[in-house]
Length: 284
Image (cartoon, rainbow, N blue to C red; front, side):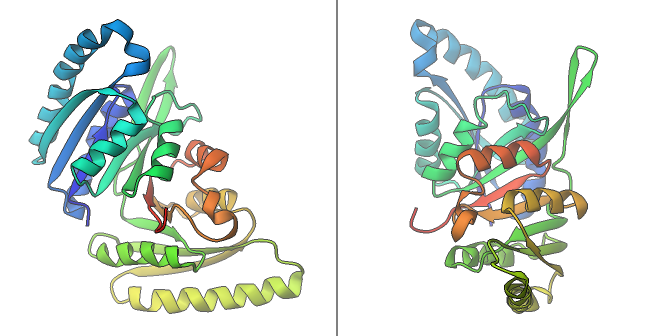
């Protein structure tokens, strides 16, 4: 379960809206939040002391909001390399999960999305939760609405039947008391012909049924086998099935290993309107 989280913040609107999603994590066992702001040593130049002072005032407001939700909160404002500092603090505080916010507009403005998300997914052994927000244009004003409500009501879990897929199943079993419905998905790539495709579909469904049999004791379980490119299929399924959260591992077999890494990661992060719970694979 997720008891301690790290929330890196750069005080963008995405970071501020992220706080409203934290209360829902109390259902996962959340007890403590670490708020972190990193004054970028590569950009602050001689203004670091002023930046730190301003940040300490703002982060204190964030702390008050979280404590009003009943979440014990501590804060850190430090100078350093943003990416490396996030991972360092996550390790030092022994957090279970790093939480980052992103918009669904296709334009990611905050420093803590895009490259930073990619860096953390490659280097950290912590769970990474990427929350999502709809950005709505109203004249010259930008309005943000959270998409994190009822996040655990219908969860999609892509599986490639690798050892790393087993890790995500272990976490899923720990969360059966807060998840209502789960969609187990396997995507077939590079089938040589129709006969091979049909055989793979049958074999894959049997494997999914075997996995889901145990889960059906506590959850509503759906099974989907598709052919195509993983990122595209996952994005389409998430919309069609009204998925509230995508749970996935960082590595797998074949091109699954690239779903949330490199350019594919950026594409999925930009295209999907769904929150993503990224489970670190072993042997990173």
